[in-house]
Length: 196
Picture 1 (cartoon, rainbow, N blue to C red):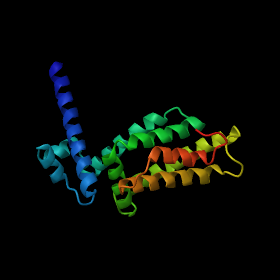
Picture 2 (cartoon, helix red, strand yellow):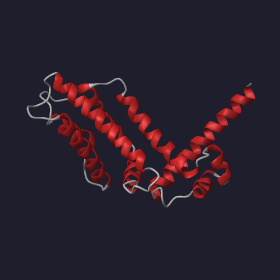
Picture 3 (spheres, helix red, strand yellow):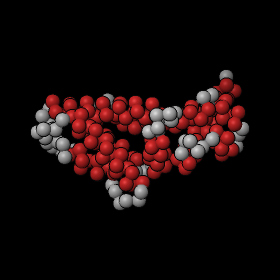
Picture 4 (tube, one colour):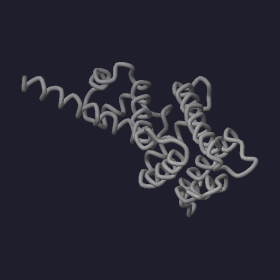
């Protein structure tokens, strides 16, 4: 039994090494310009070894990298509604400021994936729709508690909040002196009767 657990642990560690290498390479070169062979070289195994752990090849690696990033953000949002959900969005931006590589990878890949033939196009499309729906729901919950300023429409507020978040990230990546979390907080507060 111990041998099986040891093998499983080694397999899990190798998968993490491969994911880390894929993340690094995708962040540096973008998805399109990266290859499974380069990832394999970074980890010190063969391309066949990478494919043993990620049978879907480069696309499976891309999906795993994106899911790993999203899972961490979703943990912070789990079970939160209304104002608490909006406050958690601010905290996610605060964490992102400590993870430049993650933000840069997401930005690079989301830009590449605007092309409808890109393997991650559907992923990003559905992810943005899911986030927009969740933020809309939160603004709607605040509205039901008379917490929005007069005339604020939840869907428009949600889409504008996402646009502001994406814009601040892009400015920050370009080296502008931007506090993403406080910028998002100020923006959201512009819709609320009572600031976060």
